Length: 334
Image (cartoon, rainbow, N blue to C red; front, side, top):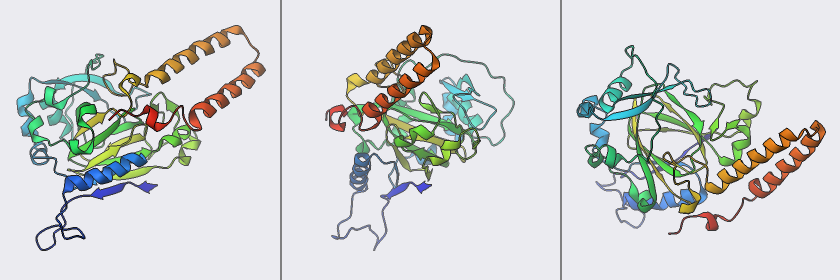
């Protein structure tokens, strides 16, 4: 287990001011920007501590701040299990008001409620300023830490104490801004993918801290990076890093996603920022079609095994051992 690096940019009192080696008072945003740039270049997650996220850190923890949002519907995951499992689908979708969501999520004991399914999905990327204009001025998004012109979405997240989000990856870089409560985050590097028992972009291991070692024997080979996200902290999660989040307490947070690849590599209909890049999606479709043809052909098992090994070796050689192209070719233009 590896502890996440903490980049602390909070002022350090010294004769009333924080000073660097030259005797100058350092700018917290400049320090954070430089150190985040280093983390981004290394594709390593880190927690940035000491930035000012604005008055939201003081106002949002009070449930009454959200009382005015009784006519603002939001879609939420509802489950009787603390560990949400996307593969097993142990949750339902429900539409409630933001005021009701905050009220329920902030309680330690939930009243009985009659849940109903809400199958509709989000049709466009979430934007905090558009959906909750009354709240947006209270949050100072750390846009000095990412290219704001490449921002894809900003998502308000509300979670009950004890709730754990499934282990998954996103195809975009993102910052998770802690506003209220404590989140315990566990991340795994992309090169541990073979140990994570993937189904699409999710892992079959719903809880990395409590899993069946007999069913998932290789999971122990993966290297977890862990840390606690406190109010005012900002967690940088590079694209393709697997992560699971345990809400130790009732939490409010904001996720900011931004594009790091060229625009044409993203699915134009992606509202969540988690659809596979276009060339990968096309490859998977072609592979599924080809496998269906081979399966229907009636080839004997020994043929299928030998050619299956050849295909696996080809994919590993072309994609896993060095990738399909240089990072410079695939990165977004500045």
